[in-house]
Amino acid sequence: MPLWTCETCGAQFPDSGTPISCPICEDERQYVNWKGQAFLTRDALAERHRLLWRDDLGLTGIALEPSFAIGQRALLVPDGAGYVMWDCIPLATPEAIAHVKSLGGLTAIAISHPHYYGALADWSEAFDGVPVYLHADDRRWVTRPHQSIVHWTGDQHRISDDVLLLRTGGHFAGATMLHDARGADGKGALLTGDIAQVTMDRRFVSFMYSYPNYMPLNAAAVRRIAAAVEPLAFDRIYGAWWGRNIASGAKAAFATSVERYIAAIA
Image (cartoon, rainbow, N blue to C red; front, top):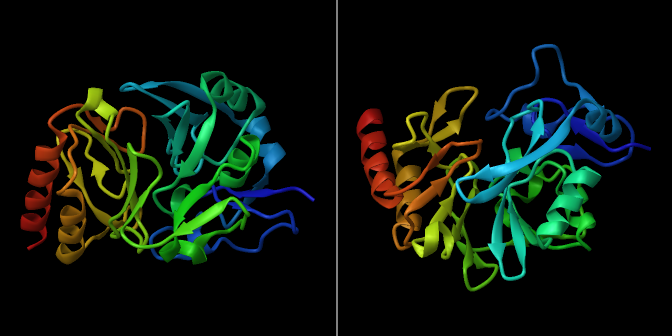
């Protein structure tokens, strides 16, 4: 039986018959498509979309074309002889897998929150079952359980000397950012997904509990995020979509953004 993918959020479901509903979409942070919940088989998704890869401020990004579901792109973070895939996408194609292998392959996958779990199992299996790091606080949102998933706990998990996962909370209880100590030419890079959303002017970040339903994050949660990030050195922030990055001066921009956000909701 085929694997299924939610058309609205991109979550993948086991091959046990067409899903009846998507718990991620039924959560108040997301939404069910106005035309009703719909699912595509993995083969149908591959027929309608392809994967493209290109440079995004020094990192290789991979995304679906045309855009699908939430539209995020994965990023490949150099780590030793291979790469950590940051965030995931709803599809893994032979061409994209071959391209990543030509670069050096994957050593791990790490994902910021359930909206970006996508085809995590397919990507792991394509690289000999590399670990997929998801925070344990978001365990209940996994729609396709897989033996490669590592449900880490606590506030930090170190993948390597240079790559650190940081549980900030906020958008989800287990919401995670990735710190790359070697990023931005050694000045450090913070990969935030949309846990801290890079704004359209690419000068600030902002925070939401729900983006499509316009539910802001409270001040206490934002202060916790700021406290988690503050000890880290970083000059660059990578957001969740093509070009949504702060190229330099990102740590000061993050601090200013926190002050601006809290003032706006006070």
